[in-house]
Length: 325
Image (cartoon, rainbow, N blue to C red; front, side, top):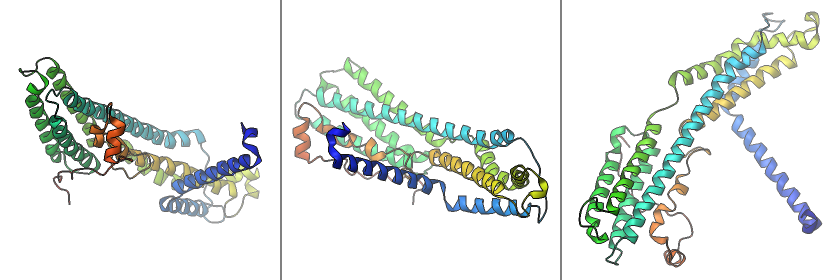
């Protein structure tokens, strides 16, 4: 395949891959090296210098496995808990999206009047409900601010009851109406699961322990970093007066690993605000929900008529949340 591209094509592909690698490497460095990391590196280097042979002459040896397991393991466990929390939230949001779309299709297809009024009204209701859900999940509002979302679900239940005759069902819960009501329950269940994830966090004690550990352990272990000087020079008599390269390197690398893992955990802690690269992409999540009426056997023509070239802005402003500024 490469030979079929020709020499010029091969050169462009190699240049493109190299550029992508450099950009990825630069992004990784930018993610790991922050002001927080630089301050901790400086404090670790100063603590190691103070414990050097020419100043306090203080060093000790211990097991590196104890240091690694006692510091890295809690951080890795916290990152794993935050990642699982994010994955559960995304799964529940996918269920909520599919349930909303299924309910809309019922209003669109089952309507025997043929004027499409029921589908248009329910689309407007869903647009408002989705705006309120996204606004609630992305904000730091109190749980009471979700009242507008329950107003939307209640209005949806009323619309379902009114839609029965238009679908050919005269009694509430008759035939397909019972399935529609079951989908309403499923939508509320998915929202409650997402809300429970949003309103709870990873164990507070674990997060506080990790925060204290990554900030105090590199400084408290400064005598241990100096001990590497004796190993490097094979003799205490030959160790540097103000530390050595191996001591500073191990201490700095220890700080870099811990703070990078801690930043990964904090980025995953709140996947709802949409500020981080690993957060939920709300524009992609709601892109199809904003255009439910443009899908079907006549979908291409309907989307062309609407000028659908991508995600649209929310059709409605979300209801202001209690306590929001």
